[in-house]
Amino acid sequence: MKILLVLALLMSALFAQVKKDEPIAVPYISYNIKMGKGFEAVQANCLTCHSFGYIENQGPQSKEFWDAKVVKMIEHFKAPMTKEDTTTVIDYLYKHYGNGKLK
Amino acid sequence: MKRRDFFKTSLVAASALSVPTFANAAGQPKDDQVISDLAFPEKRPMITYSDRPPLLESPRATFAKPITANDEFFVRWHMPEIPTYVDPNTFKIKISGLVDKEFELTLENLKHDYEQVEVTAVLQCGGNSRSAFSPVAGGIQWGSGAMGCAKWKGVRLRDILHRAGLKKNAHWIGFNGLETAAYYETPNFIRELQIDELDDHVIVAYEMNDEDLPYLNGYPVRLVIPGTYSDSWVKMLSEIRVTEEYEKLFFMDVAYRVPDNETESETPEKKYPRTKPITKMNVKSVIGYPETGTKVQNGSHVVVRGVAFDDGTGITGVHVSIDNGKTWERALLDKNNAGRYSFRGWRLAIKPKDYGKLKIMAKAINRAGEEQPFAKDIGWNHGGYKYNGIDEVTVEVV
Image (tube, rainbow over the protein chains, first blue to last red):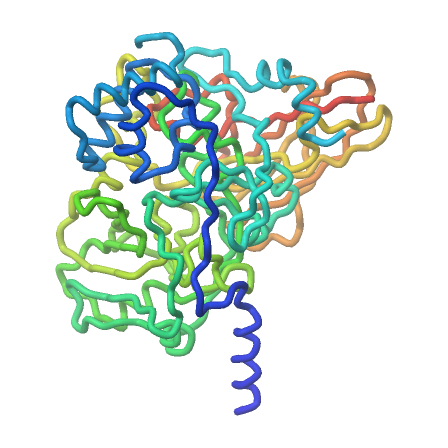
C-alpha cells in the first residue's frame, strides 16, 4: 500500500509539465504598430490593459465601430480616460485602422 | 511548398475566399492565419493574437484528431493580469455563502477526499469562428480553432456542494478565478450558474489528458461544464460562492449574449432589444485534413478527416460534399466514442477526378435532427457568437 502511494506521488510529479516552484514566463510579442499622432494616448489608455494585438486583430473598421469600442472600454471595463484622450484615441484608431467609412 | 508560402503566392485568391460577401450574414471563417514562430509556455507555436492577455488559436490540422493535445489547446483570457505562479501546496478554493459549512479546498483534498471522475468534453469559445460574420462583429476575429476536446479529471461540483451543505434558499453559484484586471473598478470575470442547471457532469478539474492543466488553460483547477460554451468554464478557480439572488455581473449581463429570438440574429442597424446567454453549444463539424492549399493528386484517394460535436445531444452523422453541397456522402464516424460531450472523429475517402481547385464541405447532424446550416443562411449577431456554418476547405488537385 505504502509503495503504491509513493509510486502514485512519483507519477504525479512526472506529470507536471513545468517546475511548479517557479513562475512561467509569458513572452512579449512585438507588434507592427503604426506610429502617429495619438499613439501616446493609446499607449497610456489602451495598452495598460491589453496588447496591441487586440486592436490589430479587429481589422479595418468604421469610425462608429472604433467609437463604440472605446466607449465599451470606458463604460464596462472602467478605463479611466479623459474626454480629450477618448477623442484622440478614436481618431488614431480610425486613421490607422479605419476602413474609410464613418458608419 | 509550405502552407505559408502557398498563401503568399495566392494571397488574392485566399482573401477572396475568406471575405464574406453577404450583408448581415456569414461566410467562411478566416482560414489563412499564420502560425507564430514564438511558443508560449507549455504550448507549441500557435496562431497568436495577443500576449497580454494571451490569446492563442489551434491551427486547423489539430482537428484531424478527436483529442486535442494540451500543447495545441487554444487559450483565451479576459484580464491583463494572469497569475504566472500558483503554489500547488498552498492553493485553495474557497466555498462560501449560503452553505452550512464554509470551507477551503486544497488540491490534496480534491484528489483524495472525493470520488474522482472523468469526462471527455469539448471546450469551445462562444466567439469561435467569429471572423465569418459580416459586417465584422466586435471581438477577437477567431478562425475555427478556438475550440478543443480533452479528457478532464476532477471532482463533481455537486459532491463539493453536498459536503458544504446547501441552505434552503440557495439558488445561484458564482465562480471566480485568479485573473485580475489592471483597474480595481473593472468587473471581475465571475460567472454564475443556477443550481438547477447543475448535473453530475459538471466537475472541478485538475487534470487534462492525464496531465496537470497547462498554466494557460487554468492551472491548477478549472470548472468543466460539458455541452456549454467555455465562457463559464472559469480558469484558476479560486472561489465558489452560493447565493440566493442572482448578482448583476458584466460578464453575465452584457458579454456572451445573443438576440433572444428564434434565429438568434439581428442587424447592425436594428439590434434586437432582448438578449439571452449563449450557454448550450449548437451542432458543428470542422475539417482537420486536408486544408485549404493542400495539394492532392488527381485520381488518388484523399481521406478527409475531422471532428463533430454538439451540446451532448449526440452526433448521428457527418456528411461530406465535393459538389458545392448538391450531393452529400455519409462519412464514417469513429467507434471509440468517448461519450456524448466529446469530439466525434469522422473520416471519408474521396477521389478527385478533375484538376484544379476542389471544394470539400462537411456538415454534422445530431440526434435531435439539427444540422449545420450553410454559412450564407446564418444570421448576424452583434457579438459574433455561435457560428456553426457548414465547413469548407479548398484543395488543389494536381
